[in-house]
Length: 468
Image (cartoon, rainbow, N blue to C red):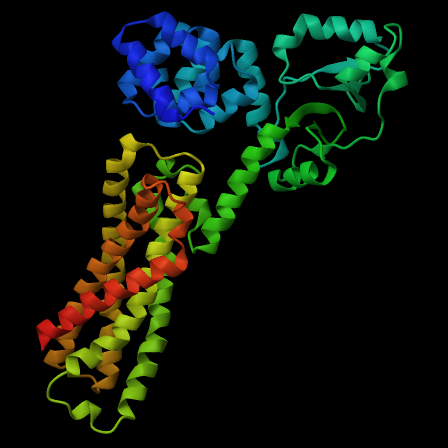
């Protein structure tokens, strides 16, 4: 397999030499997904320049693999005629995937550039609920009648093959469009041309309803080891097909959601693509569980105070009392900071695994995570002030000593600093390992947690020594 940096270099050289033919040859000789990923290493303006120089067939294929940011940039720069040329090369389900990821203004421009027939096809899919079989199916499929002969079927496929998403599996319907059976393409080659499809079709049907959840649909592919799955409505009428490549996308999406939920990230608030999730969504998806953990930390804090009270003379210390008061806060914050780092690390490792991170975006990543870390730190710092006020007020019978106020101040600053650093550490460690050509998953929970613990001790004990 050709390395992406080599493809990137070839594209760069072709542009420098202003050799359009060379650039087009590269696009034809390279896998479309690899060419698209190499393009994404450039700034959006250069991506647009490259895209305009490609032949329309290759350009349309490559377009489906570009990230949504570059896709939007191209659509906004293109005229309606240019957009229509691209859309004419795409199947309906590819267009659906395209508009699902875009802002409403860009979607309107795409729909304006489509023909009336295409808009009708799009509406037939968009009417189904998200994450259902109907929402991920393709309506570009081969349908034949039971009384058709093999010869008629072959002629129909030759005549309209460009309109079909895939032709390996052919579906047989009756006059009311109800699904009767299916045959494989190879059966058309091994049977006599006069043979009727109804005589050779397979009536052992595996199909799903349009309302079935996409995760259940994926289980059908795993259970029955199939490449294509017909989709029917409540009247058993054939309305679409789902292909294995659509299901792979579903499996990736579902596994990403499971991983996010496992790490305490609300998967409903984040997109599967790291760069599709804005700062507010990222903050919202993580802050709830972190806040709950900090509040639960009150129990740990109270238990430690009670244990300290059992140690003779510990509360009568003239020096070092501040360090002892910091210890319960340190333990609670170390656990929460470990979760912050694990959350950001998990999101970055997953993004790297899905090839969503490119070198031109590293600065954006760090800036984004700096803001998210600060927002999390401010929220947790505010909660920390409230919880410590309650704990110390109860402990000191309603009055809060000057020492307690100092502890509140410096522990709150400590939480803010540690939250920002932990978030950046969780992002940077997988990126550094990737740069060193090591497996980013090495930055797993035990390593991240240990590093964060060290950082928390340095920050909190450092602040405690300032107070002393």
